Image 1 (cartoon, one colour):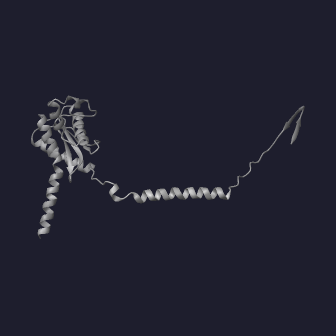
Image 2: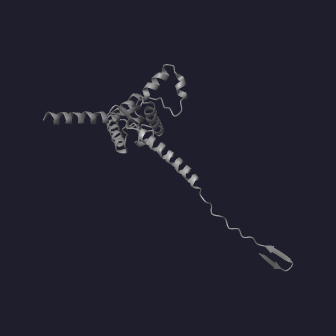
Image 3: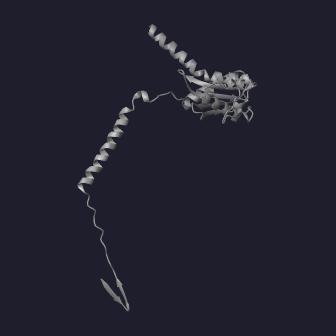
Length: 202
């Protein structure tokens, strides 16, 4: 279309895009590819069996509180007030308590002890002894607190977390408080076992 405006002439062209036509052969090829992908996904899903997945117990917040309360009860009975930290199996903090009497630095130290015991799955006294025997290179490990007072929390033979204590009258007492807290699950297991045996005897 030509439109004259003064001495100028403008040409307007309007192009309408054509709707693409899907070739039947291309559609069949795409459908075939889609079918192959679906078959592959289904095969992988079926191949994932129960033995390919590990189901492990996990320490809950309520469980961590019980551990902390047991440790605090022991510390009060023995006239010591350390900071107490409980972490899960991955070393993440779940519960923490620090009495007013405890020194400030004990807060981070107790968390470090708990995290070390959980991640390395051993009491921190083991690492302190190892370093004292001359293996000083262990101190270069990141996020590592090799000081007595960190103890793993074990439930049905599996480590579900750890407790760390710092600020008692001695390092040995730190560990004693931690062990008192960690033992709560062992005591619960023994009580449950005794109860079940009593029921079976009836």
